[in-house]
Amino acid sequence: MTEDFRTPGRRTWLDRVRPGACCLMAGRDGPDLVLLVSREGRRAALLLNRRSAEDRHLPVRFDLPPDADVLALRGAVIAPSGGSASGQTATSAAALHLGDGRTYLCGRDEFGRHTIFDVGSGLASAIDPAVLPRTRCWRVMVPEAGGAVTVYDAEPA
View 1 (cartoon, rainbow, N blue to C red):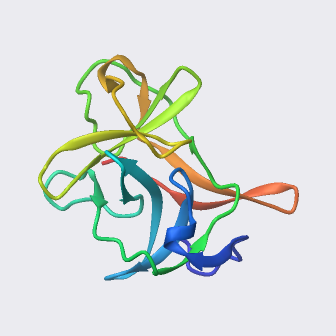
View 2: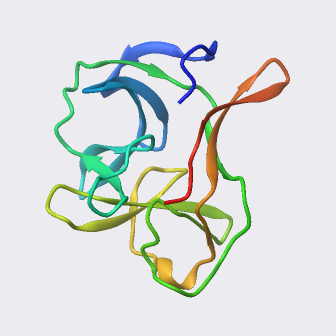
């Protein structure tokens, strides 16, 4: 993640940010870029700039303090930045799945369960990622001064 960019965003509390929004929040090893998500009515954070050591999937954290201070990235979008592929495994580590005008990211919680989230709404989805094309290269962009700044580029696993 770029450390010296001027990010158009606003400081707020985590409980005031809706699922589907991207934000920066304090992490154990520096700031985490997260997509706020919801599964079974529980809010969580899909960590976009971290991957689990054992299987390279995006971790999902449910232990979020509601009064955490975050920087909400207004207008942030997650978009492909490379070619797509289909077939192979449905759970390509940290792949962005593309389908029906929407995009999806799959995360894995502390119990090893996979969940696919609609990037726009942040809600857990029942869609089968195996039937969707996907790209392992994607980026998080934020609008700024008539253009867009890339906040984070995902690297293939």
